[in-house]
Image (tube, rainbow, N blue to C red):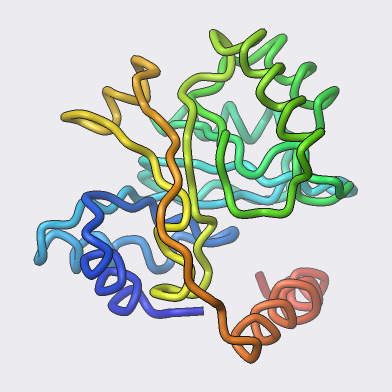
Length: 218
């Protein structure tokens, strides 16, 4: 819902060192965001939030991409496609109480039986209750060697309004910290999101984008 320039400005105003730009099923804005970040001393990881195959259409984050990953593939093929180009695979907003978009425990268990992942969001801003947060913590503790680094993420859609609500603390090089699982998810700032922006985003995500996908426009 914001331009690359607005996003970079919001990140620098928050005092962040690094952000990952992972728009849904596109890398259209990543290069501009990276270049604008470099100009002000902000590291921008180029990535994508990939929508996998119907019907679950589970989301997978791809970091450090060199080219866009095709949407609509299976979870396994999506992970392979990201790793094949040297990218990192991160699971966003796991165990949400929805069928669409969010990976569920059995799905994740089947995935990690064949694929090692690079990270998983252990703190995010999506609505997940105490029981599911506890389940996620237990699942991570039992499978951290296959799940990778613990990540905190804002799932930012509104720039200064929601950037930095959840963060990842790391030392030195970010990619190395992810590889060595030395990252730490932490709480960040809070700010209200204007209702009109939220409504626009919901329309785009739930109505406009699905229609354009069905018409082959995306």
